[in-house]
Amino acid sequence: MEELKLYQKLTDFALYLFPIVDKFPKFEKFALCTQIKNCVIDLIRLCIRANKSHSKRPMLYDLDVKLEELKFLLRFAHARKYLSHNSFRHSAERLIEIGKVLGGWIKSVG
Image (cartoon, rainbow, N blue to C red):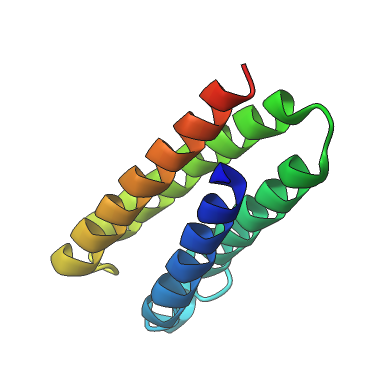
């Protein structure tokens, strides 16, 4: 059931983050903004693929790497002051939860 929980948490995170990212400066719309959105969408895609796959472990590790990429992008956006401290903190808390669910799924596939 970890896969359904992870999918829901990722979807909720996308719904939370996209309106915030849409407020980034105009000159970042096609760079950092797009990279963050694509990273979140890639996480959801990987979650779906892992759920449908017979060999889940490699895709779950890909998911874990992509999650680290997203963490970097959000830290960078926060450092550039495009992401408020509260939004960054809330995003980080959500990503920690997502990481725990992902870790549980990885452990469950042995």
